[in-house]
Amino acid sequence: MSIGLDDVIAAETVLSHVDGEAGRLIIRGHDLEELAGRVPFEDVAAMLWDGLVPGAAADPHARFGEARERAFRYLSPLARNLSGLTPVEGMRLLLSALPDADENPAYLAVGAAAVAAAMAIRGAKGLPPVAPDAAAGHAADLLRMIKGAPVDESRARGLDTYLVTVIDHGLNASTFAARVVASTDAGLLSSVVAGLCALKGPLHGGAPGPVLDMFDAIGTIDHAEGWLDAAIVRGERLMGFGHRIYRVRDPRADVLKAAAATLKGESNRIAFAEAVEQTALTVLQRRKPGRRLDTNVEFYTAILLDSLGVPREGFTPLFAAGRTAGWVAHAIEQEKAGRIIRPLSHYVGPWPAQAA
Ligand code: ACO
Image 1 (cartoon, rainbow, N blue to C red):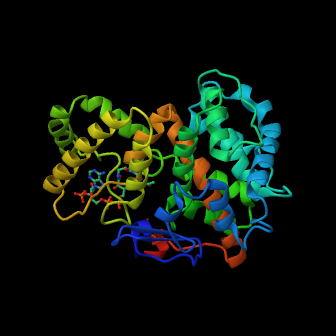
Image 2: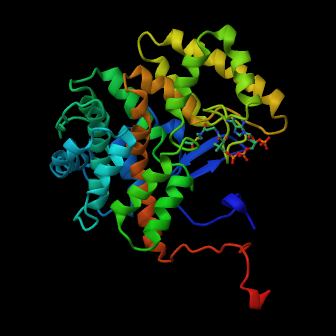
Protein backbone atom coordinates (compact mmCIF):
# COMPACT_ATOMS: atom_id res chain seq x y z
CA MET A 1 0.00 0.00 0.00
CA SER A 2 1.29 3.48 -0.82
CA ILE A 3 -0.60 6.31 0.88
CA GLY A 4 0.03 9.36 -1.32
CA LEU A 5 0.97 7.01 -4.20
CA ASP A 6 4.72 7.64 -3.67
CA ASP A 7 6.76 5.72 -6.26
CA VAL A 8 3.64 4.34 -7.99
CA ILE A 9 3.76 4.51 -11.81
CA ALA A 10 0.22 5.27 -13.00
CA ALA A 11 0.80 6.35 -16.63
CA GLU A 12 3.17 6.16 -19.57
CA THR A 13 3.95 9.52 -21.10
CA VAL A 14 6.01 11.02 -23.90
CA LEU A 15 5.52 14.51 -22.46
CA SER A 16 7.97 15.14 -19.65
CA HIS A 17 10.35 13.45 -17.23
CA VAL A 18 11.42 14.64 -13.79
CA ASP A 19 14.73 13.27 -12.54
CA GLY A 20 14.56 14.02 -8.83
CA GLU A 21 18.08 12.85 -8.03
CA ALA A 22 19.83 14.75 -10.85
CA GLY A 23 17.58 17.85 -10.58
CA ARG A 24 16.70 17.60 -14.25
CA LEU A 25 13.45 18.30 -16.13
CA ILE A 26 13.09 16.95 -19.67
CA ILE A 27 10.23 18.17 -21.84
CA ARG A 28 9.69 16.03 -24.95
CA GLY A 29 13.37 15.27 -25.30
CA HIS A 30 14.67 18.73 -24.37
CA ASP A 31 16.19 19.91 -21.12
CA LEU A 32 14.14 22.75 -19.68
CA GLU A 33 17.17 25.05 -20.00
CA GLU A 34 17.15 24.58 -23.81
CA LEU A 35 13.57 25.89 -23.98
CA ALA A 36 12.84 28.44 -21.25
CA GLY A 37 13.77 31.95 -22.37
CA ARG A 38 14.82 30.62 -25.79
CA VAL A 39 11.70 29.18 -27.44
CA PRO A 40 8.36 31.05 -27.19
CA PHE A 41 5.56 29.45 -25.20
CA GLU A 42 3.39 28.89 -28.30
CA ASP A 43 6.14 26.84 -29.99
CA VAL A 44 6.86 24.80 -26.87
CA ALA A 45 3.13 24.05 -26.52
CA ALA A 46 3.00 23.01 -30.19
CA MET A 47 5.97 20.70 -29.62
CA LEU A 48 4.31 19.22 -26.53
CA TRP A 49 1.10 18.61 -28.51
CA ASP A 50 2.81 17.07 -31.53
CA GLY A 51 0.94 13.90 -32.49
CA LEU A 52 -1.79 14.58 -29.93
CA VAL A 53 -3.51 17.71 -31.25
CA PRO A 54 -4.12 17.65 -35.04
CA GLY A 55 -2.01 20.23 -36.91
CA ALA A 56 -0.32 21.46 -33.72
CA ALA A 57 2.82 22.58 -35.55
CA ALA A 58 0.94 24.77 -38.06
CA ASP A 59 1.22 28.45 -37.12
CA PRO A 60 0.72 28.08 -33.36
CA HIS A 61 1.09 31.85 -32.73
CA ALA A 62 -1.95 32.66 -34.89
CA ARG A 63 -3.95 29.76 -33.51
CA PHE A 64 -3.36 30.72 -29.87
CA GLY A 65 -4.20 34.36 -30.73
CA GLU A 66 -7.45 33.28 -32.34
CA ALA A 67 -8.17 31.04 -29.33
CA ARG A 68 -7.76 33.96 -26.90
CA GLU A 69 -10.24 36.00 -28.91
CA ARG A 70 -12.72 33.14 -29.07
CA ALA A 71 -12.34 32.54 -25.32
CA PHE A 72 -12.98 36.21 -24.62
CA ARG A 73 -16.30 36.00 -26.49
CA TYR A 74 -17.33 33.12 -24.22
CA LEU A 75 -16.04 34.59 -20.98
CA SER A 76 -16.49 38.37 -21.02
CA PRO A 77 -20.25 38.21 -20.24
CA LEU A 78 -19.31 36.42 -17.00
CA ALA A 79 -16.94 39.13 -15.76
CA ARG A 80 -19.69 40.65 -13.62
CA ASN A 81 -19.78 37.48 -11.49
CA LEU A 82 -16.19 37.78 -10.28
CA SER A 83 -16.53 40.23 -7.41
CA GLY A 84 -15.94 38.66 -4.02
CA LEU A 85 -13.91 35.80 -5.51
CA THR A 86 -10.15 35.41 -5.27
CA PRO A 87 -8.45 35.32 -8.69
CA VAL A 88 -8.04 31.55 -8.64
CA GLU A 89 -11.68 31.08 -7.64
CA GLY A 90 -12.69 33.48 -10.42
CA MET A 91 -10.58 31.54 -12.90
CA ARG A 92 -12.27 28.31 -11.79
CA LEU A 93 -15.68 29.90 -12.33
CA LEU A 94 -14.76 31.12 -15.81
CA LEU A 95 -13.18 27.89 -17.08
CA SER A 96 -16.14 25.89 -15.77
CA ALA A 97 -18.38 27.82 -18.16
CA LEU A 98 -16.66 26.48 -21.29
CA PRO A 99 -18.12 23.65 -23.38
CA ASP A 100 -16.30 20.31 -23.63
CA ALA A 101 -17.81 19.81 -27.08
CA ASP A 102 -15.75 22.42 -28.93
CA GLU A 103 -14.20 22.02 -32.39
CA ASN A 104 -10.74 22.92 -31.06
CA PRO A 105 -10.86 22.26 -27.32
CA ALA A 106 -7.06 22.17 -26.86
CA TYR A 107 -6.60 25.71 -28.22
CA LEU A 108 -9.74 26.96 -26.50
CA ALA A 109 -8.46 25.67 -23.15
CA VAL A 110 -5.08 27.44 -23.39
CA GLY A 111 -6.55 30.63 -24.87
CA ALA A 112 -9.21 30.63 -22.17
CA ALA A 113 -6.70 29.98 -19.38
CA ALA A 114 -4.86 33.19 -20.32
CA VAL A 115 -8.03 35.23 -20.76
CA ALA A 116 -9.59 33.83 -17.56
CA ALA A 117 -6.43 34.39 -15.49
CA ALA A 118 -6.26 38.06 -16.53
CA MET A 119 -10.01 38.59 -16.20
CA ALA A 120 -10.11 37.01 -12.74
CA ILE A 121 -7.10 39.03 -11.50
CA ARG A 122 -8.77 42.25 -12.67
CA GLY A 123 -12.24 41.14 -11.56
CA ALA A 124 -11.04 40.56 -7.98
CA LYS A 125 -10.10 44.26 -7.91
CA GLY A 126 -13.41 45.32 -9.47
CA LEU A 127 -11.76 46.18 -12.80
CA PRO A 128 -13.40 45.41 -16.18
CA PRO A 129 -11.83 42.81 -18.50
CA VAL A 130 -9.40 43.79 -21.24
CA ALA A 131 -9.95 42.18 -24.66
CA PRO A 132 -7.08 40.13 -26.13
CA ASP A 133 -4.97 41.19 -29.10
CA ALA A 134 -4.66 38.15 -31.37
CA ALA A 135 -1.57 39.60 -33.08
CA ALA A 136 0.45 39.82 -29.85
CA GLY A 137 2.60 37.05 -28.39
CA HIS A 138 0.75 34.89 -25.86
CA ALA A 139 2.77 36.03 -22.83
CA ALA A 140 2.82 39.71 -23.87
CA ASP A 141 -0.93 39.63 -24.41
CA LEU A 142 -1.57 37.91 -21.09
CA LEU A 143 0.41 40.56 -19.21
CA ARG A 144 -1.31 43.31 -21.21
CA MET A 145 -4.74 41.88 -20.35
CA ILE A 146 -3.79 41.93 -16.65
CA LYS A 147 -2.40 45.46 -16.65
CA GLY A 148 -4.65 47.12 -19.20
CA ALA A 149 -1.68 48.58 -21.12
CA PRO A 150 1.03 47.18 -23.39
CA VAL A 151 4.12 45.88 -21.59
CA ASP A 152 7.78 46.22 -22.53
CA GLU A 153 9.66 43.45 -24.30
CA SER A 154 11.74 42.40 -21.27
CA ARG A 155 8.64 41.87 -19.12
CA ALA A 156 6.88 39.95 -21.88
CA ARG A 157 9.98 37.74 -22.19
CA GLY A 158 10.04 37.25 -18.41
CA LEU A 159 6.47 35.96 -18.40
CA ASP A 160 7.10 33.83 -21.49
CA THR A 161 10.04 32.19 -19.67
CA TYR A 162 7.78 31.51 -16.70
CA LEU A 163 4.96 29.97 -18.80
CA VAL A 164 7.45 27.63 -20.51
CA THR A 165 9.11 26.74 -17.19
CA VAL A 166 5.84 25.50 -15.72
CA ILE A 167 4.34 24.00 -18.89
CA ASP A 168 4.66 20.39 -17.78
CA HIS A 169 6.12 18.40 -14.92
CA GLY A 170 5.42 14.68 -14.92
CA LEU A 171 2.55 13.25 -12.94
CA ASN A 172 2.19 15.99 -10.32
CA ALA A 173 -1.08 16.28 -8.35
CA SER A 174 -2.90 18.58 -10.78
CA THR A 175 -1.82 16.62 -13.87
CA PHE A 176 -2.91 13.40 -12.21
CA ALA A 177 -6.29 15.00 -11.39
CA ALA A 178 -6.63 16.08 -15.04
CA ARG A 179 -5.77 12.55 -16.23
CA VAL A 180 -8.26 10.92 -13.83
CA VAL A 181 -11.04 13.10 -15.24
CA ALA A 182 -9.87 12.53 -18.83
CA SER A 183 -9.85 8.76 -18.22
CA THR A 184 -13.64 8.86 -17.79
CA ASP A 185 -13.98 10.58 -21.21
CA ALA A 186 -15.45 13.63 -19.48
CA GLY A 187 -13.76 15.98 -21.97
CA LEU A 188 -10.79 18.31 -22.22
CA LEU A 189 -12.20 21.42 -20.59
CA SER A 190 -13.48 19.36 -17.64
CA SER A 191 -10.00 17.84 -17.27
CA VAL A 192 -8.46 21.33 -17.19
CA VAL A 193 -10.91 22.47 -14.50
CA ALA A 194 -9.94 19.42 -12.43
CA GLY A 195 -6.27 20.32 -12.86
CA LEU A 196 -6.91 23.87 -11.69
CA CYS A 197 -8.80 22.70 -8.60
CA ALA A 198 -5.86 20.50 -7.60
CA LEU A 199 -3.29 23.20 -8.38
CA LYS A 200 -5.00 25.73 -6.13
CA GLY A 201 -3.79 24.24 -2.83
CA PRO A 202 -0.83 25.76 -0.99
CA LEU A 203 1.03 22.44 -1.06
CA HIS A 204 1.06 22.57 -4.88
CA GLY A 205 0.52 25.69 -7.01
CA GLY A 206 -0.76 27.92 -4.27
CA ALA A 207 2.66 28.39 -2.65
CA PRO A 208 4.25 31.42 -4.39
CA GLY A 209 1.87 34.00 -2.90
CA PRO A 210 2.70 32.71 0.60
CA VAL A 211 6.43 32.90 -0.31
CA LEU A 212 6.02 36.67 -0.65
CA ASP A 213 4.03 36.77 2.61
CA MET A 214 7.02 35.02 4.19
CA PHE A 215 9.44 37.64 2.79
CA ASP A 216 7.22 40.39 4.18
CA ALA A 217 7.00 38.74 7.58
CA ILE A 218 10.80 38.25 7.75
CA GLY A 219 11.32 41.89 6.80
CA THR A 220 15.10 42.17 7.02
CA ILE A 221 17.73 39.51 6.62
CA ASP A 222 18.91 39.71 10.23
CA HIS A 223 15.46 38.43 11.27
CA ALA A 224 15.50 35.52 8.81
CA GLU A 225 17.07 32.80 10.93
CA GLY A 226 14.89 33.43 14.00
CA TRP A 227 11.71 33.72 11.92
CA LEU A 228 12.36 30.60 9.85
CA ASP A 229 13.42 28.52 12.84
CA ALA A 230 10.34 29.54 14.85
CA ALA A 231 8.07 28.66 11.91
CA ILE A 232 9.46 25.13 11.76
CA VAL A 233 9.25 24.71 15.52
CA ARG A 234 5.54 25.68 15.25
CA GLY A 235 5.21 22.78 12.78
CA GLU A 236 4.77 25.01 9.72
CA ARG A 237 6.26 24.31 6.30
CA LEU A 238 8.50 26.85 4.66
CA MET A 239 6.84 27.80 1.40
CA GLY A 240 9.05 27.32 -1.65
CA PHE A 241 10.99 24.39 -0.16
CA GLY A 242 10.58 20.63 -0.43
CA HIS A 243 9.26 18.47 -3.21
CA ARG A 244 7.91 14.95 -3.53
CA ILE A 245 10.27 14.07 -6.40
CA TYR A 246 13.25 16.45 -6.26
CA ARG A 247 15.78 15.49 -3.61
CA VAL A 248 18.07 18.25 -4.87
CA ARG A 249 17.39 21.78 -6.05
CA ASP A 250 14.45 22.09 -8.46
CA PRO A 251 16.03 23.10 -11.83
CA ARG A 252 13.13 25.49 -12.45
CA ALA A 253 14.28 27.63 -9.52
CA ASP A 254 17.50 28.63 -11.31
CA VAL A 255 15.76 29.32 -14.61
CA LEU A 256 13.31 31.67 -12.90
CA LYS A 257 15.98 33.32 -10.79
CA ALA A 258 17.97 34.08 -13.96
CA ALA A 259 14.84 35.43 -15.67
CA ALA A 260 14.11 37.72 -12.71
CA ALA A 261 17.71 38.96 -12.77
CA THR A 262 17.26 40.29 -16.32
CA LEU A 263 14.55 42.70 -15.16
CA LYS A 264 15.66 46.22 -14.35
CA GLY A 265 15.95 47.12 -10.68
CA GLU A 266 15.52 43.58 -9.38
CA SER A 267 19.02 42.96 -8.02
CA ASN A 268 18.22 44.06 -4.43
CA ARG A 269 15.15 41.86 -4.19
CA ILE A 270 17.05 38.87 -5.56
CA ALA A 271 19.90 39.44 -3.12
CA PHE A 272 17.38 39.40 -0.25
CA ALA A 273 15.71 36.24 -1.62
CA GLU A 274 19.09 34.53 -1.99
CA ALA A 275 19.99 35.34 1.61
CA VAL A 276 16.61 34.04 2.86
CA GLU A 277 17.05 30.91 0.74
CA GLN A 278 20.50 30.13 2.16
CA THR A 279 19.28 30.70 5.72
CA ALA A 280 16.20 28.53 5.13
CA LEU A 281 18.31 25.68 3.74
CA THR A 282 20.57 25.84 6.81
CA VAL A 283 17.58 25.85 9.17
CA LEU A 284 15.91 22.97 7.30
CA GLN A 285 19.10 20.91 7.47
CA ARG A 286 19.31 21.51 11.20
CA ARG A 287 15.62 20.96 12.03
CA LYS A 288 14.84 18.24 9.46
CA PRO A 289 18.09 16.28 9.22
CA GLY A 290 18.15 13.63 6.51
CA ARG A 291 15.03 14.98 4.79
CA ARG A 292 16.84 16.42 1.75
CA LEU A 293 14.65 19.51 1.48
CA ASP A 294 15.74 22.01 -1.16
CA THR A 295 14.42 25.05 -3.03
CA ASN A 296 11.45 24.42 -5.33
CA VAL A 297 9.97 26.29 -8.31
CA GLU A 298 7.69 28.47 -6.19
CA PHE A 299 10.48 30.36 -4.42
CA TYR A 300 11.74 32.32 -7.43
CA THR A 301 8.32 32.28 -9.09
CA ALA A 302 7.35 34.69 -6.34
CA ILE A 303 10.25 37.03 -7.14
CA LEU A 304 9.74 36.89 -10.91
CA LEU A 305 5.99 37.40 -10.95
CA ASP A 306 6.20 40.13 -8.33
CA SER A 307 8.79 41.89 -10.51
CA LEU A 308 6.37 41.71 -13.42
CA GLY A 309 3.83 43.62 -11.33
CA VAL A 310 1.42 40.70 -10.95
CA PRO A 311 -0.48 40.82 -7.63
CA ARG A 312 0.39 37.84 -5.41
CA GLU A 313 -3.15 36.44 -5.51
CA GLY A 314 -2.65 36.19 -9.28
CA PHE A 315 0.39 33.89 -9.11
CA THR A 316 -1.58 30.63 -9.07
CA PRO A 317 -3.77 31.67 -12.04
CA LEU A 318 -0.59 32.39 -14.02
CA PHE A 319 0.84 29.02 -13.07
CA ALA A 320 -2.41 27.50 -14.36
CA ALA A 321 -2.19 29.54 -17.58
CA GLY A 322 1.15 27.89 -18.36
CA ARG A 323 0.30 24.41 -17.06
CA THR A 324 -2.97 24.22 -19.02
CA ALA A 325 -0.95 23.27 -22.13
CA GLY A 326 0.47 20.35 -20.14
CA TRP A 327 -2.90 19.32 -18.69
CA VAL A 328 -4.36 19.30 -22.21
CA ALA A 329 -1.55 17.12 -23.54
CA HIS A 330 -1.83 14.67 -20.64
CA ALA A 331 -5.62 14.54 -20.93
CA ILE A 332 -5.40 13.62 -24.63
CA GLU A 333 -2.65 11.10 -23.94
CA GLN A 334 -4.85 9.55 -21.24
CA GLU A 335 -7.89 9.45 -23.54
CA LYS A 336 -5.77 7.63 -26.10
CA ALA A 337 -4.60 5.15 -23.44
CA GLY A 338 -8.29 4.28 -23.15
CA ARG A 339 -8.35 2.94 -19.61
CA ILE A 340 -10.25 4.45 -16.70
CA ILE A 341 -8.04 5.24 -13.67
CA ARG A 342 -9.56 3.35 -10.81
CA PRO A 343 -7.25 2.34 -7.92
CA LEU A 344 -8.31 0.51 -4.77
CA SER A 345 -8.71 1.67 -1.21
CA HIS A 346 -7.97 -0.39 1.87
CA TYR A 347 -11.09 -0.58 4.05
CA VAL A 348 -10.36 0.09 7.74
CA GLY A 349 -13.95 0.93 8.82
CA PRO A 350 -16.34 -1.22 10.84
CA TRP A 351 -17.86 -4.40 9.37
CA PRO A 352 -21.57 -5.24 9.69
CA ALA A 353 -22.21 -7.17 12.95
CA GLN A 354 -22.97 -10.49 11.19
CA ALA A 355 -19.63 -10.37 9.31
CA ALA A 356 -17.50 -9.64 12.42
N1 ACO B 1 9.23 23.10 5.31
C1 ACO B 1 9.46 22.39 6.44
N2 ACO B 1 9.40 21.06 6.51
C2 ACO B 1 9.09 20.41 5.39
C3 ACO B 1 8.84 21.07 4.18
C4 ACO B 1 8.93 22.47 4.17
N3 ACO B 1 8.71 23.17 3.06
N4 ACO B 1 8.55 20.16 3.22
C5 ACO B 1 8.60 18.96 3.82
N5 ACO B 1 8.93 19.12 5.13
C6 ACO B 1 9.13 18.08 6.11
C7 ACO B 1 7.82 17.47 6.57
O1 ACO B 1 7.27 18.17 7.65
C8 ACO B 1 8.26 16.08 6.95
O2 ACO B 1 8.93 16.14 8.17
P1 ACO B 1 8.52 15.17 9.39
O3 ACO B 1 8.65 13.78 8.84
O4 ACO B 1 9.49 15.52 10.45
O5 ACO B 1 7.10 15.49 9.71
C9 ACO B 1 9.33 15.77 5.91
O6 ACO B 1 9.85 17.01 5.49
C10 ACO B 1 8.82 15.02 4.70
O7 ACO B 1 7.69 15.68 4.25
P2 ACO B 1 6.65 15.04 3.29
O8 ACO B 1 5.30 15.50 3.71
O9 ACO B 1 6.87 13.56 3.16
O10 ACO B 1 7.01 15.67 1.92
P3 ACO B 1 6.09 15.52 0.66
O11 ACO B 1 6.91 14.95 -0.37
O12 ACO B 1 4.84 14.82 0.95
O13 ACO B 1 5.68 17.03 0.42
C11 ACO B 1 5.54 19.16 -0.43
C12 ACO B 1 6.10 17.76 -0.64
C13 ACO B 1 4.01 19.11 -0.27
C14 ACO B 1 5.87 20.01 -1.64
C15 ACO B 1 6.18 19.76 0.86
O14 ACO B 1 7.58 19.79 0.73
C16 ACO B 1 5.64 21.13 1.20
O15 ACO B 1 4.59 21.24 1.83
N6 ACO B 1 6.39 22.24 0.80
C17 ACO B 1 5.94 23.58 1.09
C18 ACO B 1 4.87 24.03 0.09
C19 ACO B 1 5.47 24.27 -1.29
O16 ACO B 1 6.50 24.90 -1.46
N7 ACO B 1 4.73 23.76 -2.30
C20 ACO B 1 5.13 23.88 -3.70
C21 ACO B 1 5.74 22.60 -4.19
S1 ACO B 1 6.25 22.72 -5.87
C22 ACO B 1 4.84 22.50 -6.76
O17 ACO B 1 3.96 21.77 -6.41
C23 ACO B 1 4.62 23.27 -7.98
